[in-house]
Image (tube, rainbow, N blue to C red):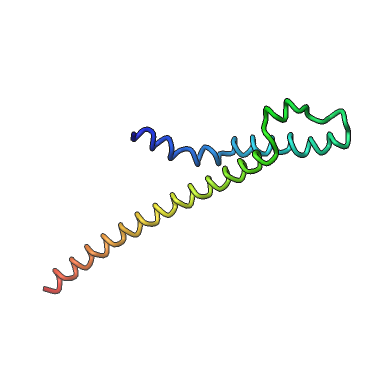
Length: 106
């Protein structure tokens, strides 16, 4: 079960990796921009089968948005965990300092 949880923790970072973002942007350009150009110049339009294989415009854009959101959330969550750890370490240090001051004052 621990291996599954570790794998699930790595998915947001993989989705927001530069390679994933590049793939989504490439698919958007290929399917949408190239499709619009193909409408103007009939011979350049991608075939229906090709568009079916690579997905449609909405799915590509939503996947890109999800990848960027997952990456942002993963980075935010990690920085929040680091901040909480630093806060806990500071609390421990302050408590130790208070204990030392109390010992000196006795």
